[in-house]
Length: 317
Length: 242
Image: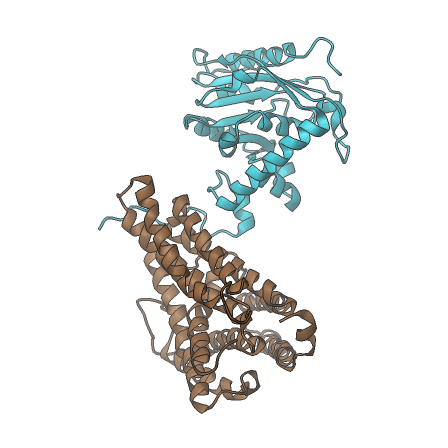
């Protein structure tokens, strides 16, 4: 991945046009709702402008190449963890917060450097990338011992571990995918597909939603929205088959399931946490979306599953 | 199991810019880190560029709450007073800054909230609430308030009249009030100039006073204010640079 390669890469160029056209179509639909049907769309427009902003930044970072993508994902993970820590109260314990920051930075470094003992120089140190959670958890457990504290430490340890493993390491897979031979296809597909599935769930729920899906977790989600999103996610791998020309039928089905079910489970997992904490959004970072973590919730869940599925059938590097 | 972490931080639902604007600000590791880094750079620059010197440094050595009162003719004044504090006390030191000037435009807000850790001081309306806030802050041991009682930068380099709000903050309270004089900052960076110029800047810190035995009525407040102005003026070097 580099700017020169991106300019001539048919997959990257295709995604550029697909996202541009999707945003244009979405804008046209929103405009139709607002100016022809005179519907109340102010909040949807706010979300829409932020989508344009997110897409722009995302494309610039992926265009710039492997290192900017990994660094960008690492910063996103750091900030998403910060939102989680602030919402859960872990942030008041600056030792634990800094320990998790260190763990997330290590995930980024493991994705950047290559294996010092590797036979052929391949980007990314996969063995260390897989081992970071062991070291990070060791560090997190060391902190109460270092400070000679026990009261309430189980809660801090648990929050720090879920924060690191889920938001730091699992989301970090998105950055590690930048080392793959087919990086543009994998990264662009997983980001675009989870985003589109999110929008599909919202749209189907808004139009057809009758039956509450998981009322105790997220009262606005409906069965209709969930099935609509799953349907879109199952069709999408065939429509965008050029992203992974080596995938067979079985892999395309798995891709659809990972995005369609995994993405929604990611959304709901963060909702469980938010519901228990008692906040509506993790933060107010992106206008119309809530926090960074509210935006990337499906990606956190789906990206590592997708990477390991693809890596099981076809060597990534 | 009992919960020990009591829920979200207080500003969890606010956008990043609004979090900087609110006061008291919730501690933020990134902001604290940037502030410490900025303080190191500012200290270095002050020493190299303005040959910065502190006289009476020992008068600031206390772990109790402190109000530092000084003359004001330049933005450098705040930086000088902050540079006189140890780094670990930086995040508990709040220079009062005009909310109508420092908390409106973004660059000034960043400078005020991140670098300086400023307390938004309402100059026009709601002065009473701001003074009350100052008193509440001082109740926490280890708080340092930096106040320029003139309320604005002097355009002549002379010490102007003090506003009586300073009397209201310290009257009848057991807090140390430290008068100090900043010499040379008017020449180095007067009001209206875009960039500072090199030139000797000196900070003279006086001995601490205490007004716990004084009443809180208007005459006492005005008397304390006048006394503090005299104390600041007396610290002016005899053959100072201005």
